[in-house]
Length: 466
Ligand code: ARG
Image 1 (cartoon, rainbow, N blue to C red):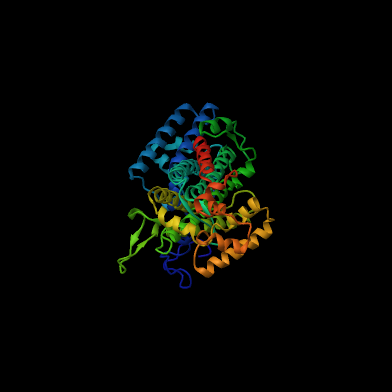
Image 2 (image 1 turned 90 degrees about the vertical axis):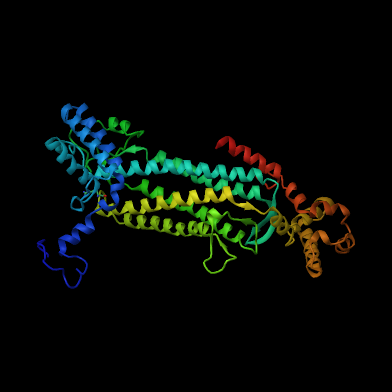
C-alpha cells in the first residue's frame, strides 16, 4: 500500500503473483543478489584491501582489521562450500556479506564500511570482474588465432573460389581465407588489450560520489588490487560504466566476426557446396531425416551474436538518460555483461573446436575454384601485360571469351587457341599458363595477396606476434 504497510492479500489489479503486496514487489524489483552473487570474490578482495588500508592509515585498529579479514575469508569459504545463506531481504552481495560478517565477528564488522559506499564498492567489484573476464577472453582469442594459423599453414596451397556477393570472383587459397579471420580476431584481441588498459583504474575511495574526509590512501588500495592507479574524479567514478560498455562493444564486434564464420560454415557444409565436413562433435543428426548432419553449433554461435548485440544496446539505453552520479538503473548493467560473457566464451570455444576439427574437402574446393570463369581477370591481365591492350579493352575481349565458354558449356581453359584467337588475334598459347587456378593464385604476390608464398609470410608474421 502507499504507506508501505503490508497487505494481507495481493492487489487484484497488479499483484497476481505477489503474495504479500507492495513491499514484496519492492523487494523483488530492488534485489540484485540473484545475479550479483557472482561478484562475491571481487567484493571480498576489495574489502580486504580497503580494511588493510584503513588500518595502515590508523582509521581502524589492527585488531579490528585482523578480525575483519579473518571473517571475510571465512565467508569466502562458506560461499565456495555452498553453505552460505543468501538473503533477498539483504538486497545485494555487498550487504549479504557485511551482514554475515557482523554475525561472525560482531561490532568490528561495522567499521569496514568506513570511508566507502556501496557506490564505489560496486564500481570496484564489477570492474575487477570485467577486467578478469577480458583477460580470459584474451587467452581464448589467442587459442582461436593459433587454430586458424595451423589450418592456414596446412592449406596455404589449397585452392578455393573467392567470392564477392557470394558469386565466384577469383581463385584464392583456403589458407588465405583462414588468415582473413586471423586478422579479424587479432583486431578483437587488440581491442581487448586496449580496454584492459583503459579500465585499469581503481574506483574504491570515491565513496558515495564526493570522496571522503578520512585520511585514506587510494594509491595503496589501487596497488593492492592490481590497478595501475586510482580514478581521478569521484563523481565520474561512481557514474561510469564505460568499462562494461566497452566489454559489450568488443564482445559484439567479436561475436559478429564469429557469426560471419558461422554463416560460412553453414554454407560450406551443405551438400551443394561440400567444401567442408563438420566433425560429429560439432554437429547433430536429424530425428527424422537420417541423411542429415546439421551444423547446430555454428548456428547457435550465429544466434548468440544477436543476444550479445542486444545486451550492448540494452546497456547503452540504460545509461543514456542518467544524470550524474549513481542511479539505481545502473544495477541493470550486470545481467547484460554476465550473459554476454557466457555467450562469448561459448562462441569462441565452439569456433576454436570447429576450426581445429573441420575436414577440408580440397577436391571440392579445387573443382569449384575452376568453375564460374574465376580466372577471367587473369585472362584480361594477360592481354594487358603480353598484348599491350588497355585494361578496359582487355576486359571487353575477356567478356567475349566468357560468353563463348558459356555458350559451349565449358571453362575458359577448355577453349581452343583458335577459338580464343577468333576473339583477339594477339592471343598466343602462353595464355594457358594463366588460365589454371593454380597459376592464377600463384601470380597474386602483392603484399597481402593470395599467393601461397605471400600467405606463408603472413603466417610467419602472426606466429611471431602470437
Ligand atoms: N546493488 C547495487 C548495484 O548493483 C549496489 C549499489 C547500491 N547503491 C545504492 N546507493 N543504492 O548497483
